[in-house]
Image 1: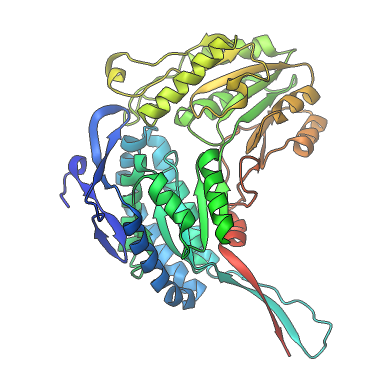
Image 2: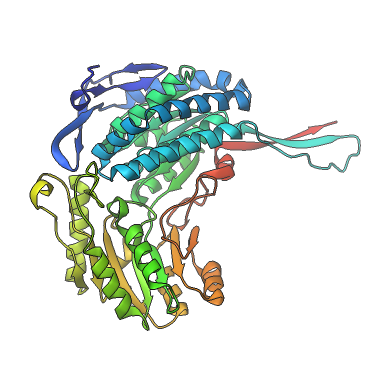
Amino acid sequence: MTTTVETKTYFNFINGVWIPSVSNEINKSLNPAEKNDVIGYVQKSNEEDLNEAVLAAKQAKEAWRKLSGSERGEYLYKAAHVLEKRIDEIAKCATREMGKTLAETKGETARGIAILKYYAGEGMRKVGDVIPSTDSSALMFTTRVPLGVVGVITPWNFPIAIPIWKMAPALVYGNTIVVKPATETAVTCAKIIECFEEAGFPAGVVNMLTGPGSIVGQGIADHEDINGITFTGSNGVGKQIGQAALVRGAKYQLEMGGKNPVIVAADADLELAVDAVITGAFRSTGQKCTATSRVIVSSEIYDEFRQILVEKTKEITIGDGLDSDTWMGPCASENQLKTVISYIDKGLEEGATLLIGGKRAEKGIQANGYYVEPTIFDNCTPDMAIVQEEIFGPVIALMKAESVEEALQLANNVEYGLSASIFTTNIQHLLSFINDMEAGLIRINSESAGVELQAPFGGMKNSSSHSREQGEAAKEFFTSIKTVFIK
């Protein structure tokens, strides 16, 4: 392995050793802000590599399981300290590899550190309950046991936080893991795994390999020695993984798409609402599963809200995420840029009115990257593709409602149910929203994106498989309950 970041080849990490894939084939990781900038090279792994990683995890699981929770937690504390030392380096790598601004990736890395520390503490918390028995001379209680080997499949949009919020609970609850990151951000994931390596995790407990989802991801879903799969990504791929896991009886957890609404009631603080919509829709170039994509506004304030929103959107600076003056970076890849542009074209074809944006940004340094203008559509109807389908880009569909009740109907009229937000000072509106909104994350007078690490996270309808990640809720997926009766 060379020491030059731009040309370094990152290997798979299997059984405590960095090794090349069996095929010796590699893929480039490119900077979406400057497509001629090669971040590094990653392995194009196959089923043989996967079998090796799973075997290492399988062989390591008994010794790891037999450690106390506090002993496993100590390893997570050490990983957190290593990550903290490397926060600037890893944040910069994530920005170069994925495109979001350095401020965002630095915040994401800090969140990763906090997640590791949180779950390190979980090693000292209770894992069961004493339950009264009908037999006065018996003792009955529950405890929890790990699943065994867990496959971790992660997306490119949060290349630091999502792998860590899956790996940390899996490990502290006694599982060993095989991680497959998205190829687009595999270099960032390799750097995270380096932190686990430096923390001294026993060989085979943490394994990572890179490669195409159709081979490595599907292989994880199909592998008979993988006992649980935690996945974040698209609905189509998630359902394939869930079906494969179901057939062989493996536990699975799917976090998938969102089409997240913000309702702005007539009594809302308009400036607060506009700022939150802009942040929720355009930060990370709209590439968050909880990003705002539909904004449903009371007809009484619609024109005023629209005017303020457009004017403030004009102030957004687009550029390289490493530039301190940049507010919004590029799309993460050429394919993602093409997807966003295709949806903008659909919106125009279906008769929506383009208020601002709608084109690829190609001025100056933008010409060599995958930039798109922040885009707002007006006169959107419920059946339009830009209203119904996840775009995963900086595109807002504006809609008008005559009442909060109508707004809720429009908000619920999609297949997704991940996050949702309302801006109101009316308690009745607030309570109606909490009770009637079909989403797993409800936010009041705040942007649709974001959840604290100690709180459960997950969606309803087609946004998830209905389990929850983060916080204590992670215990429900990564362990099984064992009931004990002693006579």
